[in-house]
Length: 203
Image (tube, rainbow, N blue to C red; front, side, top):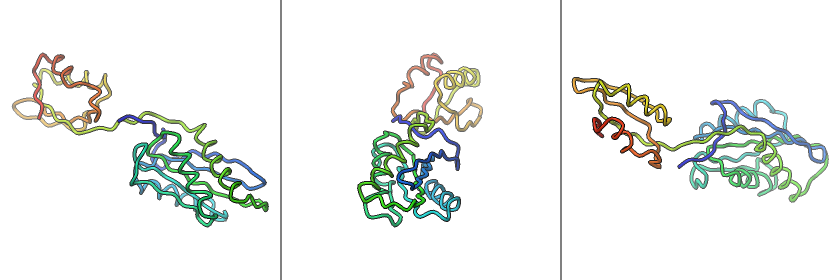
């Protein structure tokens, strides 16, 4: 499976703010491949804006359509006015492994439940508009055995197709290469076998 994710380094975040009826909504987006990464984002946002009224949040710690590693919180706002709309905005982006925290500084004007839903949704959507992103490919572990004479050719072929070699072991029979192969098998193993003229063993 391939899908877009935030193109951000670990612990980095993308920030955008909007002002609505004198209230300021600051949206933090980050790459959250797991729940721990989202919790780190939330902690950092709370520490950076400890005087804010609310730190509402939503995350998808998996692929688009993930049903388990997800969550959202209204953090004191009226129920259903912040976390769920934020989550729906993330879900609608078709992105995976993404977390959002929206920090609110109250400006003195009450927005009402409908106004809050629109404000939190807008905060996330505006941040998504400028978020750098990249394609993520789910991978599975594949091990192959090649002769010493074919290792360089195999590595070159794999590099051309963005298939990382995550480990290599050597013995008298040649090189055992552990690969991060695309889980959707979008690159056929037979193509590598043909390139090496059959001098390859799957383990």
